Length: 270
Ligand SMILES: Nc1ncnc2c1ncn2[C@@H]1O[C@H](COP(=O)(O)OP(=O)(O)OP(=O)(O)O)[C@@H](O)[C@H]1O
Ligand SMILES: [Mg+2]
Image 1: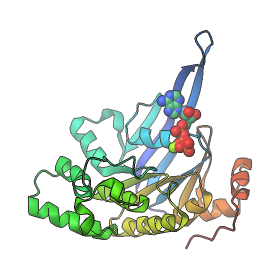
Image 2 (image 1 turned 30 degrees about the vertical axis):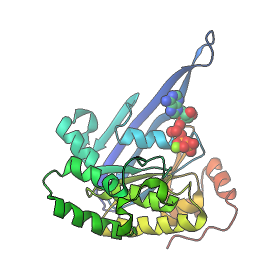
Image 3 (image 1 turned 180 degrees about the vertical axis):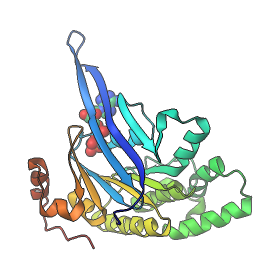
């Protein structure tokens, strides 16, 4: 990572508060899912977001993608406030910033073939392509994500978890996004498959010049793929540091506890 990298996305004082009543007569409680957070996303980096369950990781992803409305704060994409985007700008933003999810099966439509699942975003955003051109793009992409072309006419239930996650990745990158948000993409997979998917993401990041936001509750996964890391606790950022620096000199007590709870020694980032 070079220091002069462009800042592509800025989050300022972002808040997401839910109000919930526990019972009919009880007072409403405010859940501060995201509680006044600010950070930058630099072009080409892999930014990790780590924190225990319920710390607000997925909420941040959904807010950044504009899938849910914030309570307050500002999100800026290349110096332009997301709130000022018209329909066309928002559609382009949605093409540029994509997401893959934790549950490889659940995120794919069970009634669609693998080929049509991968092709769908191409149909939405790139109507100009001819059938033959689309086939070529999909064949190359399936190859890039390590899926045999024989799987084109199969259904999600016929695939393994790792293969389904590869389909999700192919679908997310088919329109050449600049940012890929990965919300716990390997948490549901076996250890050996986790390593393969992490390697795949690293390779695709280089080949497709992606900027990654990588969410995990697993510090060893974060350590193996991220450049910078945000440590999140109860909707607040407790540390935002370069990855090796964070692991060598954690400043916050909560980060120290997280690091000491990792069972095996964590290899340094290559
Ligand atoms: N629709 C909602 N209504 C009320 N509270 C919500 C809602 N969505 C999320 N929350 C709360 O916001 C907090 C943050 O949730 P979020 O899903 O962002 O956490 P997370 O870090 O992704 O957790 P996990 O590791 O389990 O995926 C939690 O306390 C959650 O219960
Ligand atoms: Mg989550």
